[in-house]
Structure formats: structure tokens, C-alpha cells
Length: 101
Image (cartoon, rainbow, N blue to C red; front, side):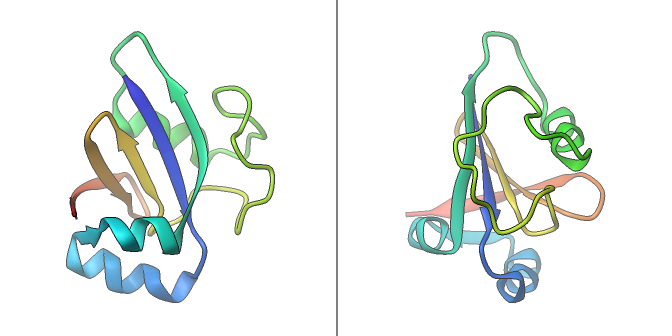
């Protein structure tokens, strides 16, 4: 199972995406930076990934994909991708969103 974490570059855009629960593939590529990616053999849920990134750890699951980030910890508006499902992070937890082509 492939897991990816995207951090939002611009904090103003986060509130618009949070209210809409939809995101286009183009917006994902332009507004977000892929900061971490890993392949897991066992099943992992979004809450556990969010918890690891919410804590102030340098490398939550190992080596990060990018050293330069817009912020250090996961914040509302950031996206976690687990397999083919995308989840947008809220203050506590994450909610499934639809990514359109």
C-alpha cells in the first residue's frame, strides 16, 4: 500500500478546499508539495499517519522525500493519500475527499 503526504504551499487556499471536499488533479500538482512517500506491506489507517505527522518528529516513518517544506508539522488543509483514496486533514483527524481528473 503506497502512502503519500502532501503539504499545502499557501495557507489561504486551505479554507476553500476544506469547505468544498473536492480537488482537481491540477490543483493537487500546483498548490501542494509531495513531502513524503512510502510503501507499506501492512494495512495502515489515515488516523495513524496523521498522528505521526501531527507530533513534532523530524522523520515520522523514515526519510522524508523533501527537506524544504512550507511548514514543519501537518496542518489543516494538507492531504494524505492512502492507495487511491485522498484525505484532507482537519484540526483533528482527516476526511475523505474526491480528486477529479
